[in-house]
Length: 258
Image (cartoon, rainbow, N blue to C red; front, side):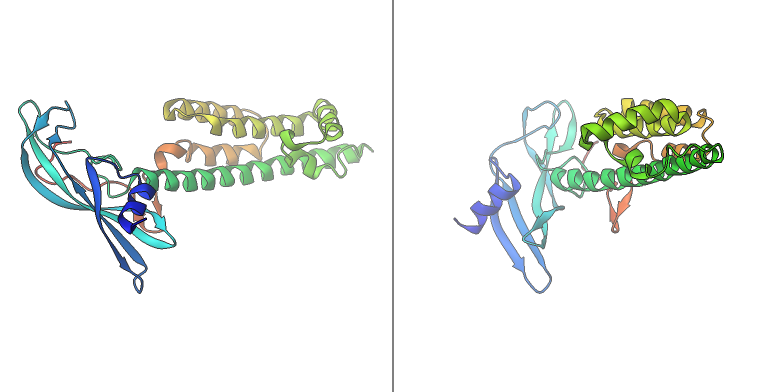
């Protein structure tokens, strides 16, 4: 298989776009995949064939290929549509105005989402443990040692628990009510990562933060405050910077209309 065919498959380049060249620079650790549009161009808004207006050389950061920084490079045609004026022809691997491919953006969003998830999980785990220690101290003063040795039980995922540990946790939640409430807030937060819609995710995180703030569990309040600043992980993922990569697209050139 030729390099051009291989890279077309790797990067999902299909007609009317074609890989015409692959430029490898081993010392620089980069590879440029040159892509060309063949055939009639269409308006990206209405889909009607349109005459070309001009071209603009564009580069998009793509996922690495064999640890080489990879760029897709193409002359993108500006087309003149009778209805919509001069607009930039669509590039199926990227959103208009973006300097990154859709695959690269999704990977970065996954990385940032994981970073958000880990940070929230760590803070909530610490908060649950702080509540547990305070309740353990109070119970032990009355001669009750029921919470001895249960630290990891409250931090373990119920889905991976053995039946006997799940049964023990269920009993403890009814007895050690403060730790049980902190644990319930932690588990509720874990479920909020399953939201797909940013709007619903924002509402759910806002409601969770309000619930945690009103829980009368002091260690949960800083966690709720931290969640308020990160309650839009999906949206923030394309606004935040990762390793100096500015994911916010630059303004389009003069011949394009957003």
